[in-house]
Length: 340
Image (cartoon, rainbow, N blue to C red):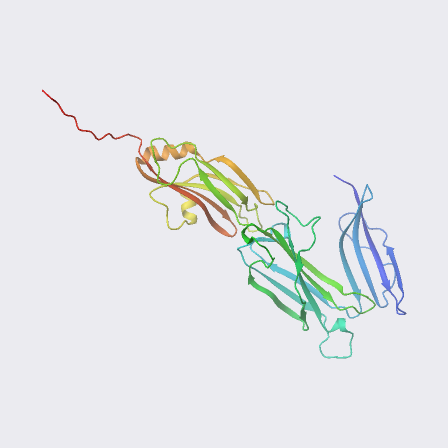
């Protein structure tokens, strides 16, 4: 594991408008802790946290502005999947965003602009095909105009919406939406001050198919059924649910609906969970053929369905199904004529 040194810098804007710094705070050790500010804050100050590894590579981890009237903001993204504290969804699943603002002065028109309102911007980044983060990729687009919040309290920015990342092929989209709250450029800051920022990662829809038997085939032996899945939704999340792909095998035509009781019952012949943190794909994967053959042998000839599903925090996805006729014994219809 790479060794790194945490560093906090302080840049201070003085009453006369001059800027002091950046200066570096001493005694910053470990992954958490406190450090004394180097200089008294007159007009405003900007604190930045970054780390330097043994190769001298510097990485920024966060920043916080402090000023006399600077408001504060918190962002909460309401999504079904928030594993490891990062909100995630998929292109078909809705989410909401709430912004809570405190410290605005609403009864004094003479105060600085930064105490009157904050602006909220939305930035959209569509990942390249196969990518799993925005590293090395530029923001695709942003909201044309900021949303202005001029009162304290909780504000619903987005309410039960699906992703707004522009895309020519929404089902395969992967990317992220970033919500950032800025104070106005005041208190000695020449540009808007970032108060809070958070993001939600958007994953594509899962697709899959079964091979080996065609719909409406008649077979004596059930064999060689394989599964192919693209963009299996990532694994364990904070609700304790684990993403999984499952093979169901049951007598009769395809059911009109599948419930969790069907999955937990004897219909399941194969189940594989994923603990990956990003979408994965599988190809030509076996589907528990021995259990399928045993079940067919017990229940006898007739119509059967094998079905591929995915279960996630978002629900049950029916990816593919094959219905076929199983006849282990060949029937021969013939007339025997005897000539004497």
